[in-house]
Length: 272
Image 1 (cartoon, rainbow, N blue to C red):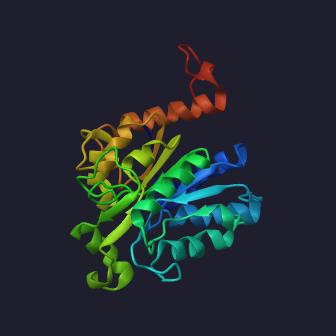
Image 2: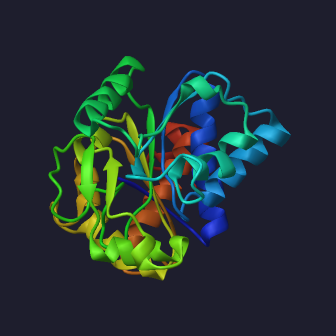
Image 3: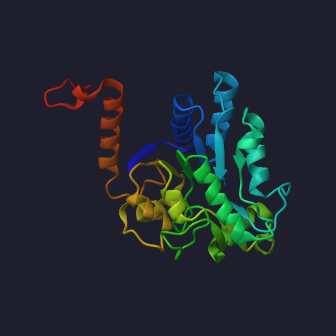
């Protein structure tokens, strides 16, 4: 894992947006996996700004969202389709036909979930999957105990997730109990995963994800098995990492490598 620790939420959001923008510029027809919730809002604001002010072009990009609540109409203010339109899609030049979001009103969920997996395959797979982190260490709606080989499917939400999401609905009673979600196995097939976590409330989950054992009780810990994972944190979310100073040193070395080439890290090289 590449661990990037930024001072605060805004700096972390900018850094994550830069990583996504670099891919879009390098591969204009890339496939992005997208997330919802409070964590990626700053990333989406920055991507919209880059499109508006720097001409970042999304016209050939294809997107797949991680999940959607079961039973919510796409126009419902708390549906993830509505969220994505409000916070990103309405502010960039993406082709609506290239947007894919799970259907929370599917009549046959088993068939729909198979077709969602097939659409990802037909698109060539996901190049970069953006992820948030739940306080219990879950990614997407893969709650604790989810199979680390799971595919897109229906998932029952835990009481903790319902409590966390109640702030968006006004009360726990109004939060849907079921969601359609990409599985952990689906997520791990992305070529790169970009995990974001900000704030002290996520510090324990971050430590268990990055430094704890790989376990279905912390589904984000499965990212330790992935070949290319970038974790962007703020200082508060990184506060319980035992090796955070080592991660800072590694990131400094990575930045020098990218900017100056391999010679910058050879013995005897001049150090800034």
